Image 1 (cartoon, rainbow, N blue to C red):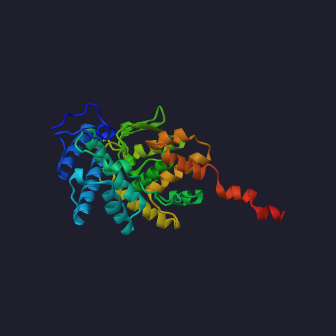
Image 2 (cartoon, rainbow, N blue to C red):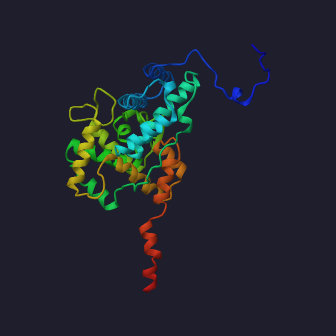
Image 3 (cartoon, rainbow, N blue to C red):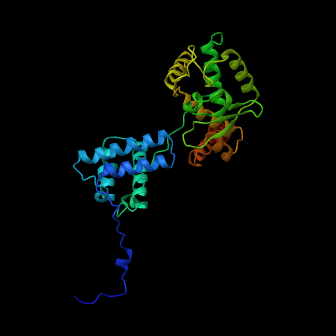
Amino acid sequence: MPRRRNKLDPEQLAAPAITNKTVDSFEMSLDSFLRDCRVRNLSESTVRFYRNELNTFQKMLEEQRIDTNPNKITSKIIKENVILAMMDDNRKESAINARLRAVRSLFNFLERERMVVHNPMDSVKLVRQKQTVIETFSREQIHALLRQPNQQTFTGLRDYTMILLLLETGLRIKELVNICVDDVKFDDNMIRVRSPKGSQERLVPFQSTMKRQLRKYLAVRGEVEHDFLFVSIDNKPVAIRTFQERFASYGKQARIKNVRCSPHTCRHTFAKMFVQNGGHAFTLQNILGHNSLEMTRRYVKLFSQDISQEHKKYSPIERLMI
């Protein structure tokens, strides 16, 4: 055998490191990844998202008779057998990107732990998403919606308070139903949000009108065996589904059309009114609990100026007829 050349060529230097930890089973890699998620104390909803998306990813490949060994999955497979396959099924861009984000997180972990030789997601980009119009309530619709709960009843007073708080703070529905009495800081006009989308807590402000309504509701609520702020007539915490259904019912009673009548529309409406009233983008990001400015920028871009009013002011035809 001839003597080895001491100087390494570029191909040899670029060769990936080999490790004994490489996996040949998708189940093994997924289990390791999910355990790492728990070690990093990711929220239950985040872990559940990864598990569901990655199980579906594996099933997609198996149905197409593709080897799911992580070291056999290539960028070509992901592009043709995942992205194009989901496009052929008329799946939304957001759904495709959600799956790609989960797959990327998995392979980034496997690469970091040196359990795969190549990371196929290095050359895979998210698909371009169409920017849809964000639906919000008009001021007239807000007034109509708030007139529907019967405040002569406990459930009506409670629902009115919940709707008002959504519009005042832009909270997510999950955050709203998880507020505890001790989270409401009346001295500081702040609510501590303890169950947001991510793992961090945040403080969300409220003002005097909301303070009066919360005090009124608390006086009627009285003492119960748990600390959840919003309760049913059976003194149990209000369920997300229950409030969503009641909210939709109020929307029908108010004859609100051409906009989705859901608690999340209140979040968009809060953002719109905050921006239009001159609120700062970074403040809005903190209030809404966004991890990045991406969504906040969308709000600012859409709502920083009232397009209809601006068009009325500068319409070529209107000015032509003056």
